[in-house]
Image 1: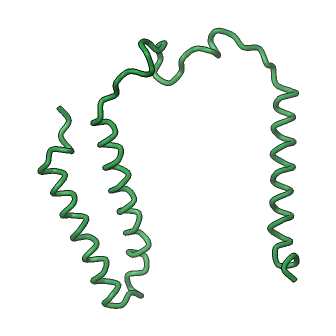
Image 2 (image 1 turned 60 degrees about the vertical axis):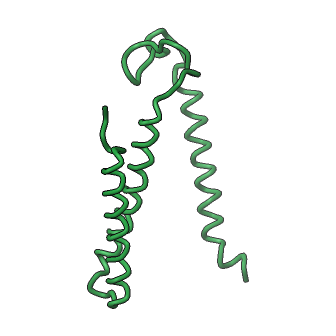
Image 3 (image 1 turned 120 degrees about the horizontal axis):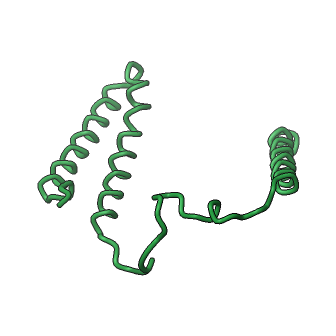
Length: 119
């Protein structure tokens, strides 16, 4: 009984593993594996890295990244709520309203603390 319920998922899982293995294997067999200096050069920023990777990193980058993730995730909660707003009860409406107030207070707090200023 349990196996019959998950049989479709298991077939899909094994087919995806098999297909990805075949595609990966064929690309490794058929593609040229010649590494030249152009292929091995730095590609993210256009110049070779300099200095040690163990050096001090400015904490402001981390702060901006964390703030972006926090506010981005909070905004992600707004989309499903906005799509189902016509079906929401007053409890759901005021609950999200409270959430938005807390979000706004957090944003104003970060703004006043200078976390959003880049010096």
